[in-house]
Structure formats: structure tokens, C-alpha cells
Image (cartoon, rainbow, N blue to C red; front, side, top):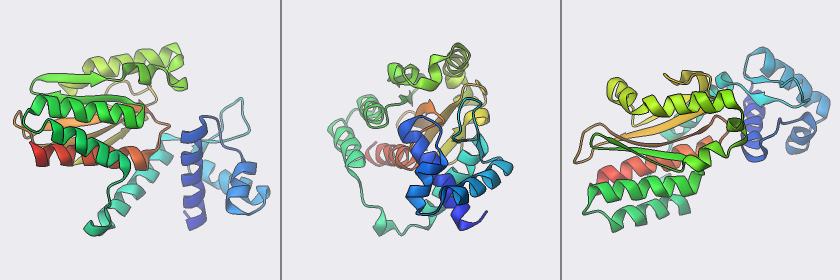
Length: 238
């Protein structure tokens, strides 16, 4: 992929996350200060690569799971290459930190407060393991998303939630931050959902987890940063 194609893919993902409708060439042409024809040509190449697709009812494009995976991998690479001193905390990260510190002497309350903060900041469903229990908050956020208004998606998401706790115990994701996009999810592959989850050490287990579940259409940079920080913060405090 060329640099411009990478930038256009990122723009499609970020615009789609914001407006929840397929992204057209006119909008991107204004963003990149080039002609609509140039954008259409680049989008055609991205479509051939399997990075974006065109819904039947629209002239615009939306990202595919493969496109999201490429984008998430570039975000992870950028994070790995950041100097530690450049990781300044944004307002959301500071909010998580303040709430966790308030309950630093009580592990269960600290974890719940971190989840509740993620729910407010990301508008997704928040989850965490507390001992042998799975704490969830924000289910209304999840099912109010336009993607999950359709019955088949709702059933697939519900199946994912029903089986999430045993799957986490069995799979024990090993990276500090794990992102499962759409069909990459072990359960509910057709749900159109993304699970972003961070592993951390707690008094309950060396493999405690905190994260969010939402539609594949989301602001990955922001959400990944917040989930990663929540896990790191809990491990530091607890």
C-alpha cells in the first residue's frame, strides 16, 4: 500500500467511526485536497485489496475487518515506537487514574470504577474479571449502536457475551493489549463487534482482564489508548 492509500484507509475508518454512514469520495477529496476522481481511483484499489467495501445501498465505502486489522496493527506499531516521555495523559486517562486512585485500597471497587470510566469515555460495554466473576456495565450503550439494531447481530453479540468469561479463562490472551475485530472473535464471529481487552496483574490473578466490547466501527486510537492505560493503572495501584 502507498502512503496515500494508508492515509485514505485511516480517514475512511475515522470518518465512519464518527458519522456512522458510508464515507464518500467527495468528503475525502476535501480532506486530502485532491479531486474526487483521484479518491475514487485510490478507493477502488483499496477495495481490490479487501480493505474497504461498498454497501449495496450506498455510493460510499466502509472498512472491512481486514482494513480494521491493518489500521490497528499500524496503531500498535506507532505505540511501540513512541518514546516513554511522549505518552502524555489525556483527559480521559487522567479521569480513569483519579477514580482508580480513590479506591486503591479495595481491589474490586478499583476495578469496577475503571470499567465504569471506560463505559463513560468510550460509550461501549465495559468488562473486567474480578476473581471468578465477570463484571459488565454499559450494555445499553452496546445495543443502542445502529449496527446492533438488527436481530442477527443482536443474537451474535448476546452469544459472545454469554461465552466471554469461560473463553477468557481458556484462551488467556497473553499480550498487554489484545484487539479482536469482527470475525476474529472466537464466539459471535458474525456479530460485527470488536473486543479490546488488556491483561493486568491483580490480587485476584496474574491474568485479570479489563476492556470494552463495541461495534467494529469505533475510534480505535482513543479506545485502545484508554483500555491500555486502564490495565496499566490497575496493575500499578493494585
